[in-house]
Length: 366
Image 1 (tube, rainbow, N blue to C red):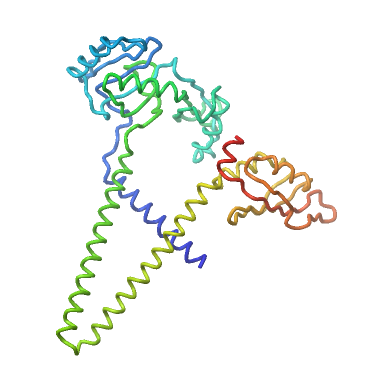
Image 2: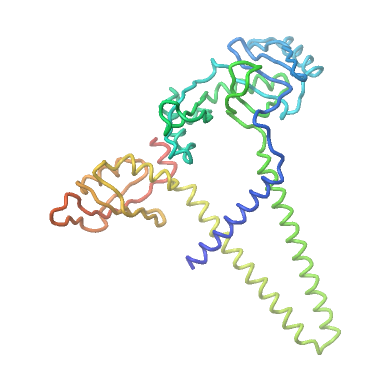
């Protein structure tokens, strides 16, 4: 049964991957730098409003934070006459006073884990809580002084700054499609901090999925119509017993598929609940890496339901219980088997089991 569930999970993953890749092929490629016709450049003085025609940039004015209703109305009239209104052509740009910029070095070996590396660095870069942070990064290239390191620039700001700028934009009737950062309106974009439009690849995937579902429904409808025709022929020709058996077997197959679909739905709901209730495996591995001393290493790490089994060697196996208990990811830490230490060996073998704390508890602890 477990193998059956694994196989179904692989089928779902393969379908999702295939649908995503097909959507990427069918979705027009987005330009590396977002084109714009109306820019809202957020500065300490207010929201600077600019329009672009070809290569010419025109400044329509500045919307101050304390602007009167008459000033807002005048800007709205000017925008209606001279500025693009579509979200995909409107860009909100933050100025250097709105962001914190840092350049870090990341080992080339960790390039595939860049998102996780940057996420872990954010809390050491900004002075406000990570949940109130909007950030992005760009890979600059290899560090000239150390070829094994990659220079990566991180740009971060607060959600309050972004939300305040978006609210100001909406007061003049504009809804930006994205938020980016650059030192000046005419400078190239450094990073995109927020994409406010629906992901075009996801939209295409949704359309394809709906189309495939419609095709499947048509196939089912055709199949059911065929069954109806067979039933009608059976009423007319009593000697067509073999066809009746064929129809019955098809009905049984539909019931079986329906039962399997119900089981798949239950499994999806159970897996979704587990993903919501318990932290990801990468988070658990990072928690182990932080808590285990240099004199300890792992041989095995298994997760069953909400319990983790940790097997390895350590110079002080007993001390590991307290270290793991102190993490927000584990609780009820205990030995699953007696620790052993072979003659002449400095490291002892340990086998520890621990219950996983829920995601809500882990986030509140952090």
